[in-house]
Image (cartoon, rainbow, N blue to C red; front, side, top):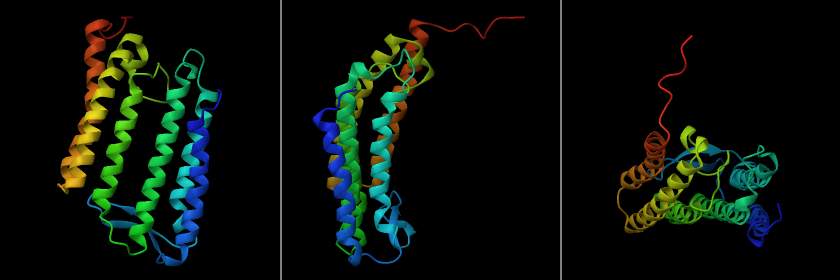
Length: 220
């Protein structure tokens, strides 16, 4: 799979993540906050020297995994047909993790940062980016709405991802705006759960309508 500029640009973000963590190292407490609950309150800590580099290593692992996936995709489920959208997805995910790292480092170093508002804003932006690529994905085992019904039918896959794309963009915009307005994080969480659940249910409904089921299997 030929690399596009977007996926090549992901690796400088990985390097930048380690550099930024090193720059912030002396300003961070020990242990370093490395996890926040949905209310934006730190509830997980990692001691130095590893604490500042948890997110950079997570970004490194994510980019490496996403880069490897096309090489191990089974026959008949290749990812070459949506090579460019997938590489743009890699960049969007890398940018997401880099933004989360910046937010986390600023908060951990004592800057006045509302973790809940900042994180949900970035999550909303990622969802919008992913939504723009959903309709371009073809059937595969690694990316998209992978349910038994989408993997069993090209038509169900297509219809489900068209819906998911529109839904992700709409919900992503709503989540980002609500976070910026400072609404309760419960609202954003509910919207994200709905955005994840509706395509799954929809894939089942569409498969049942188009393909039906075998009535419980063959008898002995």
